[in-house]
Length: 197
Image 1 (tube, rainbow, N blue to C red):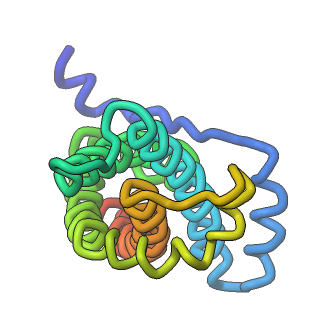
Image 2: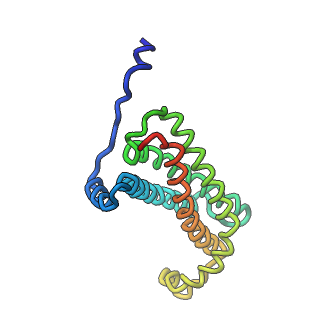
Image 3: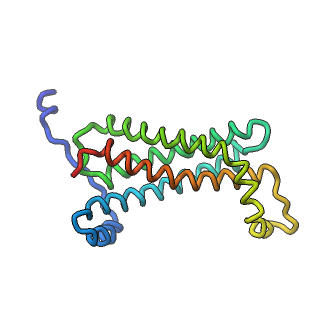
């Protein structure tokens, strides 16, 4: 029986959704590169969903159990951004496997998950180092810029060090997400999903 299972073809599962039509139409304008453009657009949409999961988790954690307040502000920022990143990685892997690369099945799901996680971990390390090194500086730079919006919360609103840390974390996060998305697409396309045409 195990020999039969080894020779059986794996059933391909592909997810269809209302975005497929517009994505294929846009990608079709790129001629011979249309399939790659279609994959990039799907990867970007999956990444955007992952970014919402990532950002939402980060905001919730910083507003509740892992507020970046002294002491241990740096550690709390690292823990919160790591948990948020891992939630997004899991979502991104599932959706990319089912929707972006449904034709990539020459490797086991376990092997692809390991490859995807390795690539994501490299992105996470770079992003976490970036956020940890820059969140206070960026908070100091961007808090005055958004001061008028913050004053809508209350008259004479004076941002605290915690508020600056949160704003800085979000700005650093945003920059990191863009860089990591480009890294993830290229690395996953040419390693994790290199078995597709």
